[in-house]
Length: 286
Image (cartoon, rainbow, N blue to C red; front, side, top):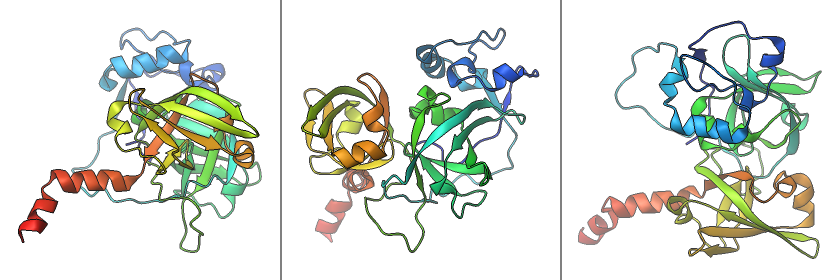
C-alpha cells in the first residue's frame, strides 16, 4: 500500500542543490547509479529507475528505534471518495531537510487544518507537514514507496490533483469507505463520449482485477466511482462520468495512456482472506 505518512530520507550523495534543482519536476530528481548521478529527463526513465534500481542504492533511511516484531497496521484515516476540490501542484522536489516534498495550492481542504492531518491527494493518504492559510497552500512528504505504488510521480508543477480531507465524526458519508492506501495504478485505454457523459476504460493487472466487480465500488484518483462492466479477457473495467463529475475531478482531464491511482473495495480483500484461512470451513464444522 502507499505510505500514509512521510518518511524522512537522506540522499546518499549529499550536496547543496541549486535553486533550479530544488524546483525541478519529479522526473529530474531521481538518480540511478550510486557512483554517478545523472539527471533523468523523462517520466518513463523515472519509473524505470524506481522499478529496476534497489531503493538502497538511491536512499538510506535515518536510524529508527527498536520496534517489536509484530506491529499494528490500523487504519488511521478514512475518506469517502467525494472530492472536495482540485488543487494545483506548486512544487515537487527535495527540500532543505533532504526529504521529498510536494507543495499544493488549495483552499477548501485548509479549513480547520492542523499539522499531521491526513489529506487524500489523488487517492493517496498523505500527511500535512506545513501549511499557510494566508497563501492557501500546504505541503506533504512523499516516500519512494509512495512514488512506486502511485501515479504521483507523473505530476509536475501546474498539475491538478483531487483533494479530500479525512472523515470527521460529523461528516456525511457520500461515497464509500476509502483508506487512501493505493493498491496500484491502472492505465486509461479508452475515453468515449456519450451525450454529455464520458465512458472511461482502465486496464489493470490481473491480481487487482479480481477485486473489481460490476456495480461495485472503486476509488480512481481518490474519486468514489461505480464500476459498470469488467472485461476479464481484456484485463479492463469501465465506468461513466456524468457532466457534473467531469467538472469536479481530474480524471476527465487525462488522456489515453495516462495512469490513475486505484484503490479497490476493502471488503473483497477481507472476504478472500477469510476464505483462504479456512474460516468458512471452521464455521461449518462447529
